[in-house]
Image (cartoon, rainbow, N blue to C red; front, side):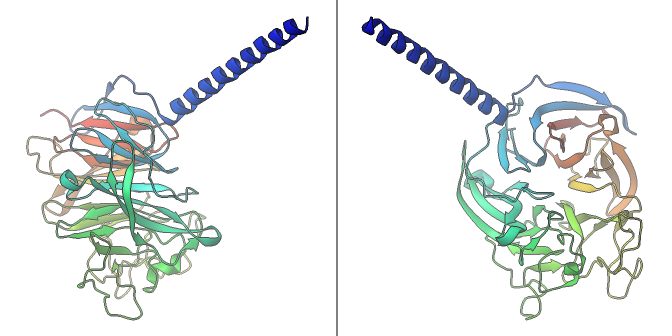
Amino acid sequence: MHAVVQRTALVVGLSLALSAGLSACRAQQHDAQASQPAAKALATQQVTSQLGSVGVTTIASGLEHPWSVALLPDGGFLVTERPGRLRRISADGKVSAPLSGVPAVWAEGQGGLLDVVLAPDFASSRRIYLSYAEPGPEGSAGTAVSIATLGDTSLTDVRRVYQQQPKLVGPNHFGSRIVFDGKGHMFISQGERNDRPTAQKLDMLQGKLVRLNLDGSVPADNPFVGRKDARPEIWSYGHRNMQSLALDPRTGKVWEAEHGPRGGDEINLPEPGKNYGWPIITYGINYSGLKIPEAVGTSAPGMEQPYHVWEKSPALSGMAFYTGHAHSKWSDSLFLGALSDGSLIRLSLDGGRITGEERLLKELGKRIRDVRVGTDGKVYVLTDESDGQLLRLDAPAN
């Protein structure tokens, strides 16, 4: 009888262990599935535009607030998710598990993992650059940039090359985009952390466009090098929250766009040492409807006017030039994502002049976070949603 009880207990124990093992296995499978959105069949729809029908193909979905996309030479993509994940997406839409080795990010408010760009020598070095909100002491944070080597499933040789100083407390206005000028420099856009006076203070890096060598060192010809009262990294200042940055391939000039407050989103072509006015001059007002306390109006001596301004804020995000495709109806355009407007803005260009504007993708009702143009003339867009998507746009047929 005693032996029977022992055998029964053994069977029950094995059964429970097996059940627990199966439950753990199912939980692990669920976690893996949750961290790795499934690839779906590519679906294309048609949306309207001023120049004809635009084909919109959903490459991938299930991304959690994706922030930036980089186009890989093999036809795939790197995509950042703001909570701190970097993923590969294949050309056919298969989404990888998060890559390991990503720097720790401060994923609060508007902070998190932000831009991703391929190094100019990516084909040989496999290096990438990431911008992100970096945690600091006592709940503070600031914009930072790291460089890393891209592997199949991980980042290695991760090294921080820029750090916004000082770090401030608060959840808003980190920027940030990275662009290379083709001359051995990178520009990093950032915000003033919603602390308006910092944008005018040259001993602080908030609200500044900075210019660095690719290794993070300061170029000797930066405009404030040698001044004891100014940070040498600064290229231009008086900016609010710069989430758009692109190099005009026709001229080599950097274009930057930034959020105004309530109204006053603007494009600038930042020049060395120039002051772009925030918060002393602005075309916007506070979200409450009241005047910006520091503002004196829309102009002031020694402060630059915007190159282009929107009285009603579309909430500008990623920016990309569409040039070199003479066969396309979109040739000589500038694309900008719009968050609050839920559209992709296309500006028509005549040289450097903006001659027209249309807003695409309004039918989708999605916040547009990033836009990039492929060498094949396709346009790639990220939607900023809890179930974010990577989309491909085909220009209207000639």
